[in-house]
Amino acid sequence: MAELVIGNLKLGIPHVLPEELITTLVSNASTRVERIVSRGHASDPGFWYDQDEHELVVVIAGHARLELADQGELDLRAGDYIVLPAHVRHRVSWTDPAADTVWLAVFWT
Image (cartoon, rainbow, N blue to C red; front, side, top):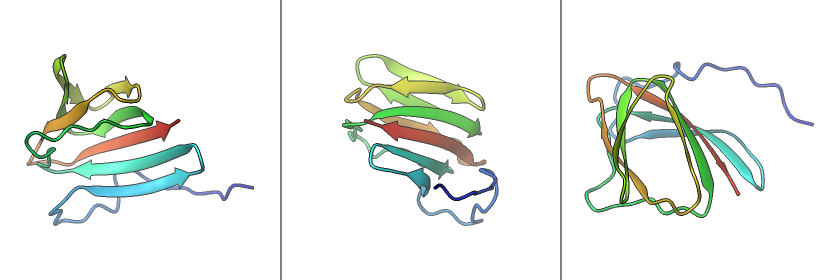
């Protein structure tokens, strides 16, 4: 039986964030849910995610740009989401350096 957990995606974020903060909220053999906090973080130049998992990404707060290979950049703000099928190459090209971008990411196979 699952454990009852209550939280807030916008709380518990450190004042200093030298690298992205990734917190796994729940996971099992086929699914993982993460909170990701970015503050001016982006993928390294030339780096592309090419995942075996499907991914749903929701921007809870903040502002970011996601680049899709062969499709260009998407401007994402609070409330926006995208479903990335497995092996869709993508990268985070920009996140707001002055405010937290809080993402909710759901991965599944």
